Image (cartoon, rainbow, N blue to C red; front, side, top):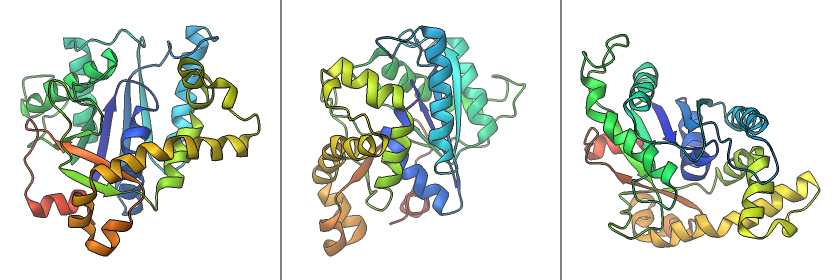
Amino acid sequence: MRMMFVGAHPDDGEISAGGLAAQVIERGGEALFVSISNGNAGHHEMAREALAKRRKEEARRSAATIGAEYVVLDHDDGRIQPTLDIREEVLRLIRRFHPDLLVAPRTVDYHADHRAAGQVAVDVSYLLTVPLVCPDVPAMERMPVIVHGWDRFRRPTPFQADIALSVDEQFAQKIGMMACHESQFFEWIPFNCGYLHEVPEDASERREWLSKKFAERFRRIAESCREGLIARYGPEQGAKVRYAEAFELSEYGRQPDEKLLELLFPG
């Protein structure tokens, strides 16, 4: 099984689908993260060029912790638009990797870059199978299944959890991936959100702090998807799931039956 995440920034994929990626690789599959931007605006002190270089290395180290790959494209952070050039660049990457499952943000999000990345993902979906579009890369015979990662936004359409996945066993790996993005989770995001003073100096303490800081987010997903978790894992195990990732099926990709869903998201 081959899973691909297309997002706006280095670190988006880890938050949305790091646990799923770890599970895919544990089962002998492959995972590829793609960031459309180089992340060169996400800091309060660093210059753009140095930050882009740093974030690319952080992404590489993050993927390496689970045996995945990371591709960081060279578009400016904060300026992504679903242009034809970016659409075709991403289309070629998808065709070359040939994923069974494509994960992307929804087009409902607080960040314009996230919305643009989600739009690119759905814009390329049908074109993946059209040979005369980007004919330099062979067209796929069929579209991948496309899903969108969880978000909290309700207007114009709230997120629908079609698949809920326990990541209890992968939670430490997920946090480990996130911790590789030091410029974000220990510097920029705390500064931007007003809690930089909370971040520990010691590396091991930082990881524990990050785990506690983000645990509530993934517990919230588990609680909001409890019925789906029980349906997937059974009443006893489903009720005990602490941390979850959730995904909404896109109408634009391949439409999976129950058998295919079990292959892509085994319980």
